[in-house]
Length: 144
Image (cartoon, rainbow, N blue to C red; front, top):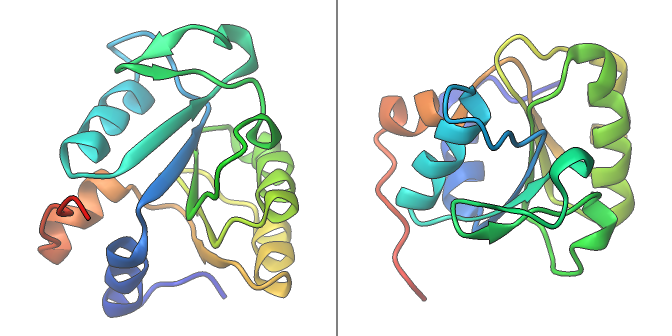
């Protein structure tokens, strides 16, 4: 079952350092653009993924085409895709050994969530970290 307990969600966010954001947009009016900036401001390293703008930069970070192209360990994959497309991102997250997947507000794929959990990933669904972090009172990460 996806995480719903506030303490479990807080623990996931507190243990996360590197987030791959699948479905980043380079348009400032899109939620993924502002959520990436929020997460960076909170101390996370956010690696954007979108094959349509791969090779460009968003908020100072190189945009990757696929999760498998990144080449560094990913703690959490934040998915900004339609529910129908979320399963593909979840399967890629499993394949790269991510520790968790986070499906954004309105993104619901129970079958993909079950696959991720069966592979040992923590799952959050239909929530936004930019809402949960302030709600849960999570302090910005400190440089290590």
